[in-house]
Image (cartoon, rainbow, N blue to C red):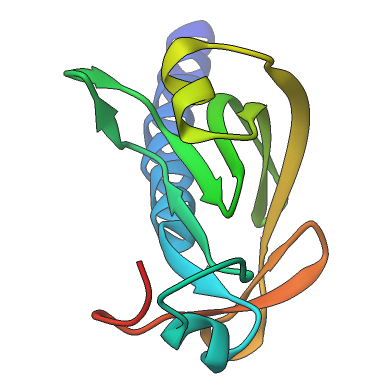
Length: 134
């Protein structure tokens, strides 16, 4: 009986951990920038960063982190405390992303910040309001 309870406890813990992990991911989804001015910028380079943990491309799931001339496909997610480390494959241009040309591996670290902000690789970002930016 002790083994049954232990196995049930393990199964319950796993079931409870999965939604928490998914909830943590959804807290990072969205369009982020270092400044409100960058959020409003419509043209040229800026700090805007789109994080989409479930973006479909060509009918297939393609979670990604997208920045100016830095388009990254998320290959693996690792929960670390209240943050997530993303193992990504990045491409300089969108066309390269689509063709898989000149990939480079990287790690992107996401962590919650104060007052609804997040940290991307240790730097604070604020959420851009809908309709601002890309």
